[in-house]
Length: 318
Image 1 (tube, rainbow, N blue to C red):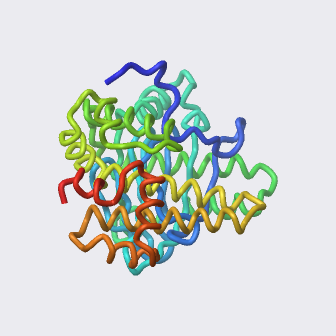
Image 2 (cartoon, rainbow, N blue to C red):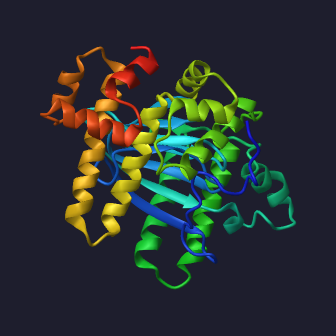
């Protein structure tokens, strides 16, 4: 793999909360707010609390079915994604905070024994906590307390939020056995690949481009990427572009232009996934995705992905 200038710029660098209070709660619904949350990672710790519906939560290379009441714990530096289950929507809360917010930089026993190892990815609490598990009620009370404090923002609410987060960390470390995971070369390489995709997301990335970036053959890269992410490269890039488009759509004044672009991207993404996952005729796939004219579909597909639908299918061996 070619060298990077530094390891500081990664998949997500968004500021959560403010510099002095790096904590935030995001209410989300898949697919209303986003079609999916692509595989990514960040330096903050994240809690995912499922309120309604069902969805797939991917942590590293393993996927879990999330149901109402489930709490997922994403430690700093952990690769994770959220996907829709066909036929279901999922309402959930993202609670995201920096470890410095808890005093991770302080020179005391709590920081040295627990917060620093947690921030460094050397301490791993459980990934999924279900309502029937012991101590679940205590964790849920902390989540509700944080939600209420952030809604009212009464005097000194920040202290209450910090206390609730520390209580959650205490419960996770005290009540559940930690599993120490050694960082693997594959995991670190995937982070570099995802960063390269992030930097070049506006370009027509191909399997050959990313294989060259890794110094591998195209076939080896395709097998490795699918094993690590559960998606083909095209499917991952599509998912990421749709998420970015959905976010931009919320912020823009030019709704008509952006809705048209978003819908077209989504139709092409569905077609690319069908080309990858089925042996249906290209005409059938085009029509199912909403393209009534095959030549227009071929032209739009090549403009977006740099190859025709037929070339793409041949490339992935379908």
